[in-house]
Image (cartoon, rainbow, N blue to C red; front, side):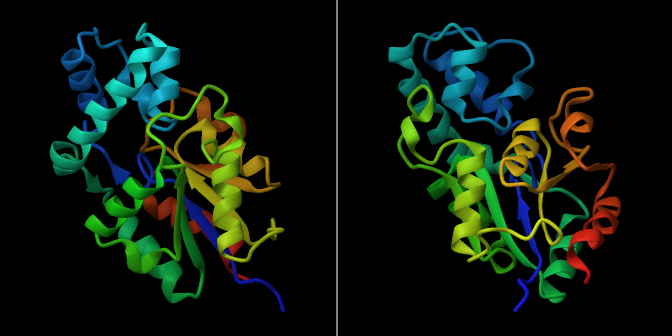
Length: 228
């Protein structure tokens, strides 16, 4: 029997608008720990926070866990107050659910936090599972084989849905960063980019099958994968 269509969703920058929850929260965590915040904190939206600290700041390795801990504590309190669902996304989620499309979250946010966030914004009825990064505080450099990188997170979402190997004609990733496109490609899948997220100029056009300018456009693009 043919698999039902599957849509995998990134979270921040795709379904949820952090509205400073990540960028301001990261700046506050750095200042609290005695470090200067770098310019262009939008780069912190997408990859694991530890990875971004290694790439974009001079925080020494032995201090990264402390900065991440301070950031996460603030995110679950003040940060979520700054977050909202992007306008127009709920109707897309509802249409897909009502059409029998299977949906899941595939995010590099730690899974226990992502699950809490999904529940906080009443999104759980749309998603069969929430696949996120392993729950340790800071993934080691390189990941050491655990579920931290986007390909592994996408693969885990597909495994839980019983959709491995995936059907490329009826399975698609939706995200706002190149990490989403690269992760989808590793499984032979297309990624639909969303222009309302945090990608830099030209970032999505290089790796995505198409880029939606607004949620109505996304709903139209998804039909290629969700309608038989």
